[in-house]
Image (tube, rainbow, N blue to C red; front, side, top):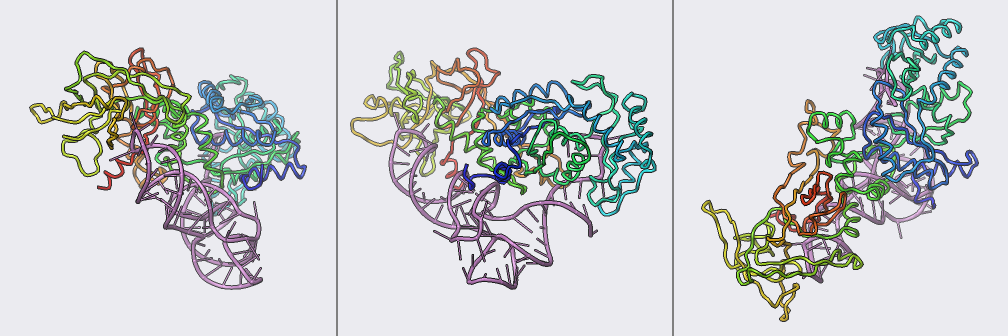
Length: 556
RNA sequence: UGGGAGAUCGUCUAACGGUAGGACUACGGACUCUGGAUCCGUAAGUGGAGGUUCGAAUCCUCCUCUCCCAGCCA
């Protein structure tokens, strides 16, 4: 790879390889199984996987499961599925919880070296004596216990002889260190909880700072990549590694996590959205979770491309949601089968077309891909068009149907509007037209031009479909900038999900297969939702097509 | 007022002392049996002040602003 196309971490790896500091790069993605993966995690996955891939190294999926209070098997399974779905196959699947024995040995090593001690202070006392950002902390009265006493007490902790919160094992570093993380950080706490994997073997569990570097050391990780907020944990990461006999010395590097506009990456908020029913679940198509994006119709390749094109840096950033949309649009434009579906139906009766006639017209499956072939679509006297494609009193530059205007029904005929039929309340219920038999297929011998081309479905053959129109989840671009006193609930977009039950689709879509994506002509890209049943398809809108008419209108 | 980090078009990101480039967005136009797609074009940026240098986004000094850290979470 050439230098100019490398991001800053790739340059570091490249240097380390060239200088001989390392022989092979080893990375890892270390999720805690306490929730579902979102697109921000996907950035970490693809980055780490990518480093190993481009430099011929190894990549592990490692569960950082050191807290029995939060972790669950279900999350672990979903993470495995999601990482695999993303296409980031790992060399080894590891669990930090498998290393508990080794962590314990290294804790003993630190105690024997006089670098760790058992502190009997309460959580409250520990908090109070930690000091503040500008004031140093105070040494614990238990800080100078003998090695023998610490060994005995730590063993008592491990044996379950101590109560939760009665004591902890702390590293003996410096209570007046300007970096708060170095003020005698806690290494082990007592948690009399069953762990989803280790079960009841342990009642003491290691803290992240103590454990993480050792996990990396055990696996031979060379470049331990994490997000920015761990920058000032790095001295501690290094301290733990430098004070015991580890088999390998990894190094930590930090990058800015991904933020996407109009959504959140906070596990807390995501969990609350699900729990409060604002969304239907972790896989609600509005969620930034991988399962949500997947159900929305995003593909692994589009997500990977989005991630790779947004790049890597160390400065806070928030990527426009429109960028994600442009990537999936681009991919779908090339691949998606086209179909005609009317979202808000308006009946058209073609007065001079025989009532008993049905013609099958040929339609391209994908104009971007001739190899995709074509299909036959039924046409008859009564068809439905999009309600917004007719206006009784149209503005200038409205190319669609209106009294006296002629438009093309895509792949079928030219029709001209003759009459508008309204109900008692004045609502348009039907538009009566005449067609030009000479225009079959969409052109006429006289070569006259029609500006408007509409999608349609034959009334007699249409399949009723449920369509779910999704929009941005939140109305605020940067959800880290919520107003004082407001919560995420105040910013939920009321139009984030609009369900249409009366949409009409062309016959082909009756048995659309699960997960398939289509372009509904002039509307957008839609995928088949798992809620679909035989003959009753449900589609989720992934993204709209660019709509320049909407733009003209909004300016008027 | 402690420590750590970061500031380049509206957004994301290149430029590694030598023409500030690309993508998204926006705005024009061409073309079109999707007002889609495609193509062409336009607008838009180095946080500020000094300094070094023939030449600075890049090196130095000072300033400003933003983010992170006081869990027995990760």
